[in-house]
Image (cartoon, rainbow over all chains, first blue to last red; front, side):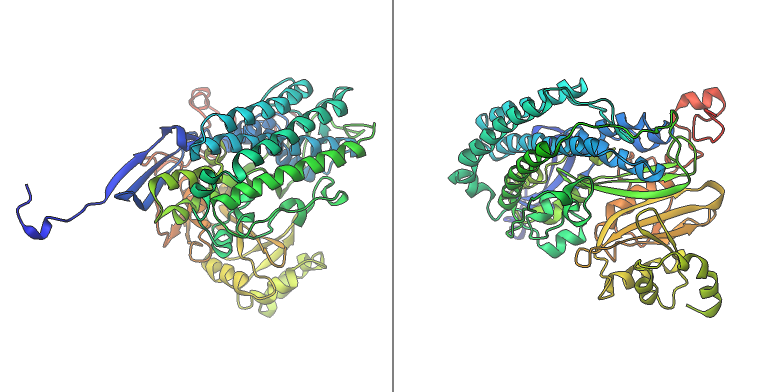
Length: 374
Length: 181
């Protein structure tokens, strides 16, 4: 019992452990929050629960076997992850990808971006407390995209469909018609989300002004993707260093200026509309043709060299740094995880907020732990 | 650059026309840097002792303005030492640069880049635990992905076995040029 009056009203900060098994952490992520009442004073994140040594494993496997590990690294946007990897191999091996394969790749990565952002919309709704409706709506539309991917690649999540040089096999004959069907469904989904969340008073009250990060801080932390574009930095690899055919079609980089959780939500919503626009234009450009280069070596070897390939994945810049010393496997493979860099800024964004808001800030980064931990 | 070094650098510089090497060279005055042309970006080799000075100069330079650290990692070249690799980007001038510092195997110390970009914090922690590179002055030198007590084995080094089966087999399944020939 405290007897001295000087200590009578003394308060003590509480250490609160969240995770690693907790629905709000979107995977196996743990953070220790130092809380003063309801206010977060400090956050210590702990990652690595899902570390599988994917980089080391890829160094022991030949170039085509590594594709499977990329799927598992970024399982919500596996096509985007595969794309960085195969582009790195192509750059080192100096392979020219046929036009048809490039257009199909672009359709697939944009559809995957839609699927990933839909996943965000659903899960984020739950974080904010709108349980049920958005999640089920998101699942409905995501299912349409995943069904399409299954028809193409044979798998719902781990596609392993892109190959160095092109694609594993051509898309089904009804591909264009099916894509248009999916786009119709997704357009409806986007409209539904817009109606359900964007002007929802509770949603806006919970997200506006929460988890602010300035443009300068976001750049310094190495953030990327919608998380940095919401702070007013128009950083998008698709625009700044166009790959595939992004410079041949019309689309906009979506930026918001508020830098808060609501801005990150709006950014993703706007990006979904842009992705639909991109896919529609790609479908018009799609012509019959080859999907692999004519002279493809049976055993793929690369000359010595190194390359850092970056592409714009749904969560930000997915980079693959590949070093070759000749032979049929990478000497060193490093995956630059967008989430890892975004997650670094979590403490900066959450300190001073309420505990419940810190959860929303975490949700707004849209982390995939298998990409963070690799 | 002094006169001897510039003669050394003549051969690679000849192929660096049209790249940002000229500006980088100017920004790195007083630092012995050499450059080569990579597949996409220019690769600049900087002595490890001067790495932070070089990175700060690259960031502070008004035309280069490398304000964004894309990636920081290392490559184990076995006997040739460990390369610490920085991938830089400028969000205003929109150009890329790869900076490399080669550490000899018997002295794996390099100054921390956290004073230049906060983004380097976790990336350096990961590089430290995976390769055994010691980042002098790092504000938070704990392990990142590995367990706290795993601070003396370095999984991404080439001499580290992939799995127990490799030890049992007596030879690595690791990278070898002769395999699959």
